[in-house]
Image 1 (cartoon, rainbow, N blue to C red):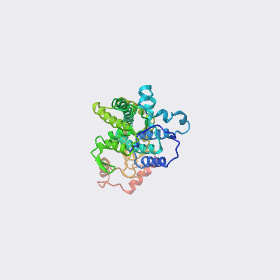
Image 2 (image 1 turned 45 degrees about the vertical axis):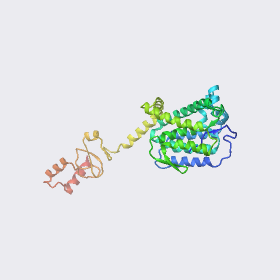
Image 3 (image 1 turned 180 degrees about the horizontal axis):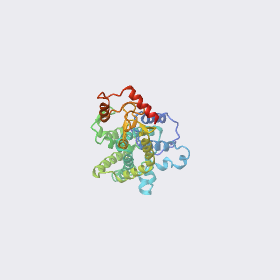
Image 4 (image 1 turned 120 degrees about the horizontal axis):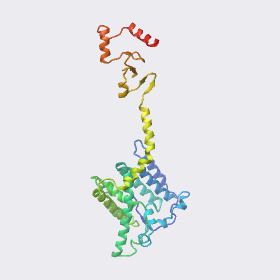
Length: 344
């Protein structure tokens, strides 16, 4: 469960002493991506890495990235001063190690499931759409609530964190689920889990951004409505898919060549040893020995590799006719033919 977007920018961002939660997060990622048969979705991994790097700000990133005070989401600054940096960057900033840990473990669990089922291109498109929708809806809610109460209650609130997007992802993940989930001792339908979590977080962690989480839930509902209304892939998904095909084409071409080479049998002398014979080889007039799988010319009736007799019907019929119906060559005849083969 994401810890939520918190109010007010604080000092010490990225500089607090580690509480051991980041190594624990790294262990969870390794267990998920390192286990045998894991799908290893790349977009989820990239999102995890981006959030962690922005929090740690190693090396030159510390100078390049804006501070948390300059990136915190504030509706008033965005609407009245056009500070769109806060709109797009604030989801990737976190106040503390625990804030980052809970959001990233939630992203790991939801992202792996969604990306595996949707595909990386569509998942990346969905995350971009949910980020824009959740931030935009939160902005509209904050602006609209000015008409109903305190001017500064929500409109002048600072918030950071990825949990708005995570609430939207939870809505998408559980939209068609008939399962039940346990939430603080309560058993509720999975499709309503996001709403229950919204209320419980406000009760137990009152400093979190209610509008940020509510905006995420509404963003998930809007996204599902758009998907049902407009069938087919969206333009952003098509763009990502096209770029991916262009970038990965050389790798796939090399893999195809390697597979083609490895599927060919081992060539020895005039024939071929292997399990499968192609139609072209059969058409040239070859027969395959049932003992050693060597491909021999139809000009000979005994395998040139192991001297096993040819087993097709025409050969058996011919041998029956030559040997008086016995169907077998004498030892002297086999020795004579073998000597003739090596004398050629």
